Image (cartoon, rainbow, N blue to C red; front, side, top):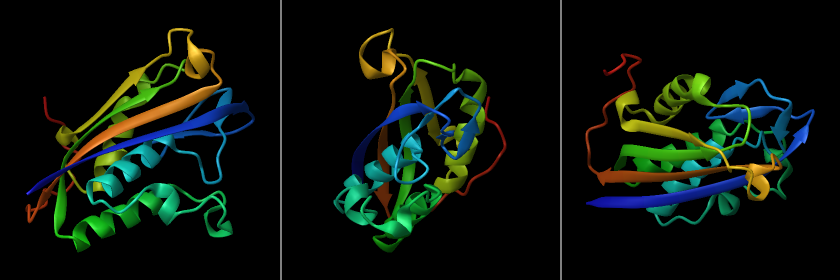
Length: 170
């Protein structure tokens, strides 16, 4: 049995904040604003997993009204989604994601983000896609006021887990 989930997250950008994507800190004049570390990619992937499992969304598990999650590392959210995935007898087959950000350019960080996401999801890097887009000067992303991430994930019931390997596939 297969399940597909979709996740989406958007955060305002402000000077003086950190920009973290897929657990990787990115050098930037603007960072994401949020209750936790505002890692839009980890949030979107967590939401995709929870959606595939029909377990609600990230806000229903980690409310921004709960002080426990203030400045929390988003790996905590993803780790809980992974625990629930295993508890329900599923494993991740692959993830495809898009991060929309006007600047800085993300190409130099994509491999580190993919590797970190693969490790967190306990899958091979060859099953993790992270694409970077700009807003072409349009809307909140295009005017550098926001960052947005989207993710689609495929789960398979009773799949043997292929654990993370830093070996690159060419």
